[in-house]
Image (tube, rainbow, N blue to C red; front, side, top):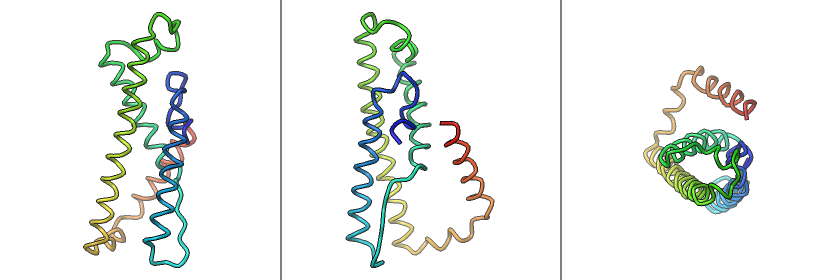
Length: 148
């Protein structure tokens, strides 16, 4: 999933970060499922859904960080790194920190949302979603996976 999240030549040095994010999240999913599930057999793992959404977030972040610095991120690939070393290091440090923070905020926010839905018995409201909504989501997900 790390190659999906950090696609392209510009962000390839962060692919190991993407792999680590998914390994750590998979570990914690498994730990939480094992100790908190009321079902005798519970399995948890990361899925490609998160990778597709994170890829879009990282793509947007990389463009905005480069724009904030006043240049395009492709400078780190197209020109010799010696000429742009400090700017490229600053770009990659900013992208790393912002991506990790976005993952933390998103995970906590989604966790609190599910906790709220479960605590107040609102999970039944999902049954009232029109069937075209999840079907559209799955179609979009399939398209995004094929694109990456």
